[in-house]
Amino acid sequence: MQKKVLVVDDEKLIVKGIRFSLEQDDMKVDCAYDGEEALEYARRSEYDLVLLDVMLPKKDGFTVCQEIREFSDMPIVMLTAKSEDMDKILGLEYGADDYITKPFNILEVKARIKAIMRRTSKQQKNLPNPNVITKGDMQIHCESRRVRIGDTEINLTAKEFDVLELLAKHPDKVYSRDALLETIWGHDYPGDARTVDVHIRRLREKIEKSPSEPVYIHTKWGVGYYFQA
Image (cartoon, rainbow, N blue to C red; front, side, top):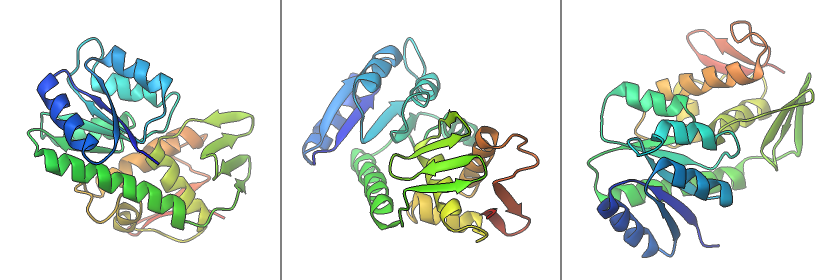
């Protein structure tokens, strides 16, 4: 099936180059040049990946990412012209799955996009997939990738769901930060273990009544994280 990518950047030459390169690999590419246009595309169609620049007219990339996360878990990769760690962490905080720093080589961008798509496909294919995992009031619907606590549906990003699903399918097994990073993001992911900490913190804020006293995802100090059976 043809992959669909949304490329969002106000620099038209960058968009043109990325679009041409991806179309050479038989991907369908839509293009947006400001934040509001990007949201319109994202609401109309589900993409296999969104390549989203941080600095955009009308709405910046962080805002767009956050608003997309209110209705979709499609993978989002942030493009940033800055290399500071804070920008990368902010992107993850707002729900991004990965980031690429400008200036970049178009071949590197394409390789990263393909790697994310391969990881997503492999995870969906290889992980055991019981229909529903139940823990207390929580239900994790693996096929539809939805989470409910009581009567409330919890909106998770793609990576937040992947982390929760992996831990819940192996209750009481402690995963180190490095093990989670390699399993969920892949060995070629350029980030570090802080990525895992950010996602665990966001997960706890969404699924725990008291994040400082978690019921579902626990910390094994000095080792890693686990889901309590």
